[in-house]
Image (cartoon, rainbow, N blue to C red; front, side, top):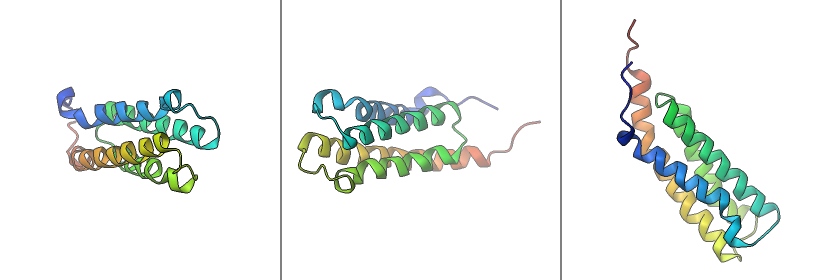
Length: 120
C-alpha cells in the first residue's frame, strides 16, 4: 500500500487543530460547569478522530464520526443552554461547522481509499 502524502491530508490536520482549540477553549472562556466539560470532551473526541483519520486514511468511519462530533459541537450551545455565554457559543458554532465541513471534505477520499484493492 502506497502511503498518502501528508500534504494531501490538510483537512485532517485542520480538524485536529480545530478540535484542539475546542478542547482548550475553556482557558479563555473562564467558565466552569457541564457546558465547559462537554466542549472539552467533544474537542477531545474531534482530536481523537482526526488522529485516527491521519493514521488510517482508509477508514470511512473516522470521517463520518468527525461529522457527527462537529454537529454535536455545533448544537451544544442550544442543547446545553449556553447561548448566552457568547464566547463559548461562538466557539461551538464556528468550530463545530468547520469540523463538519472538514469531515465532509475527507469523506470522499476515505471512501476512495477504502475501495482501493489491497496488493497481495
